[in-house]
Image (tube, rainbow over all chains, first blue to last red; front, side, top):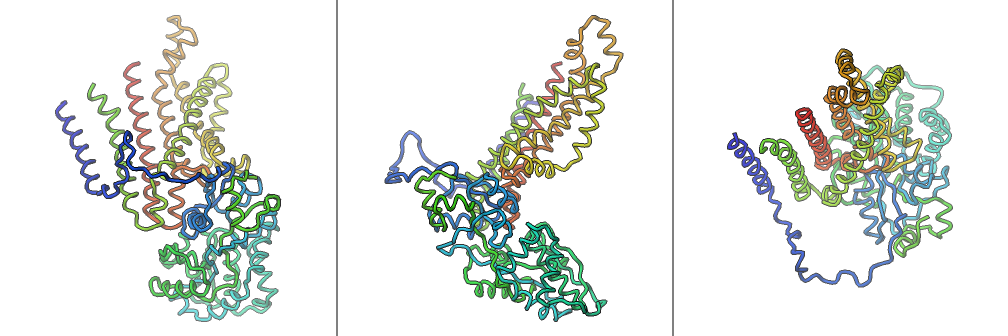
Length: 339
Length: 240
């Protein structure tokens, strides 16, 4: 009996040792260090920088916390570090900042809550954040079936500048209109749709998807209304669970069209790990690769650039005299207490 | 003795080693720069620490409160209350864990403490229910004979009711632990940290390795804790 147990134990140990060996985890040798004999440890810092106040906590969503074009890169370029980083769901960073849970948070530049909550976008004075212009992305087969989609959506994309998009977002987030109402009103006002819709064709409907946040919901409704007005039947699948869900649905062919941001496609979908800050260059690369690899066509992109932004409360920013990210970096690193 | 040692210590130890191997493997073989940045020993250990803290604090609180309240409600004088509370608890259990976290977020704000509090309340439910059900299911004739032998209320509780209800109470605790490990991965949405950080971050940048590491470690944690509690149960039952 005991022999049998010993045998099993032995086998387990062998299994573990074997897997450790197979993994080959030995190349990183930095761990071997005798605590009693501190080997030629060079004096690291001439003088330690001023202590960072522990109140400097940064609220961010998960994606920004890890992307090269997110917090890690920001930290490196501006040469600072928050005392702590809290990751949370995308939508609640604005509220967390407003309610005083954190002094600094990340958000999206075109979000309507920035103005409504009396927050301020810090100027990205070293132009770190890459571009996130938005394009309708259509499956190649869908576009073959309805080539007019491009003619319908291209002028609409061209009309969506930063102010327009912010105001549309604000109408949904703050004034509490439905995305579909906001979309319809704007399309009417701009003359993209009117009182004279074309007859609905009886072809295969176009499945329009979107991610789950306000801007995406509104853009999705804009696409649906515009297509339907021009006689293209659609299916509303807006509000899917996030970038990856929508994108995978589109790769599988379950979603035919949704609005995607150039920077997101570059990093997340095409697997680049360096961002591009020129809108045209980023768009060209993404459009070409996506068509080649996944058969997805990028229509024209919007002038608005929904890039990441670093926000503070307006009152705190005024009090500390912070207007740019460089100011913020200097304040943090020189030991200014957090508001 | 060796057999005891083998079951109580070696199996969990083996599972822990599996976890360590997963971590060593993924940290040393990242598929790209993003994965390398997310899967550092620091990050994994921080996630583990936060996850265990979330679980342990909420579970210890939940076990204490759940068992005590369950015992109180099963007393004959409070029995009429017990049925009502049981119904409320059953309804409470049907609320999704994400919704519980979201509710407490809107009420109390964000962060670790709020997540612990939400998990604590959520974990009380199965423990309370099973404690109450376990004690009230003890056959009346046994209690009667205990009374006949001159045991007082307290003795009946400690000598008769609790030992007989013990397996059911432990089953409730095990259910709570498994629910708790799963729900704790959602704490990340309100800034509570834990393995959810790894899972959701991996999901948001579409790096499977990060997702699998986070999910695998969370699952291992659940398996280990459940196993240990199960072993303790067997031992205690043998002793009593």
